Image 1 (cartoon, rainbow, N blue to C red):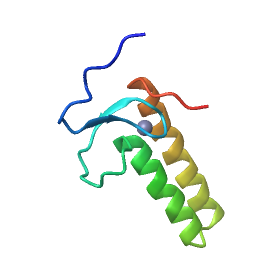
Image 2: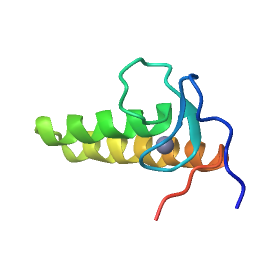
Image 3: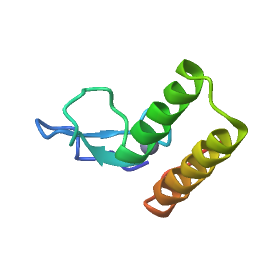
Image 4: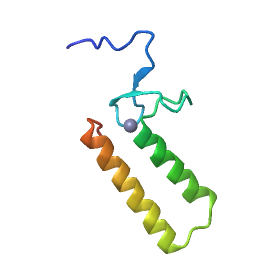
Length: 78
Ligand SMILES: [Zn+2]
């Protein structure tokens, strides 16, 4: 098993959700890649707001798109 050398002072980390190596561009320190961060925000939006079915479908589509992007960049989802 190869040990990643990315664990230095750099701001890279493995995303907590999809596991891909990402950089903390948002400065939130949440260790989420930008796609998973986006998914999380959309999910919060869903739980915080009373969305119409059309808005829910739109939010779900945005999540699918972000996940596809993360997978394309090496992320994995169960
Ligand atoms: Zn991720």
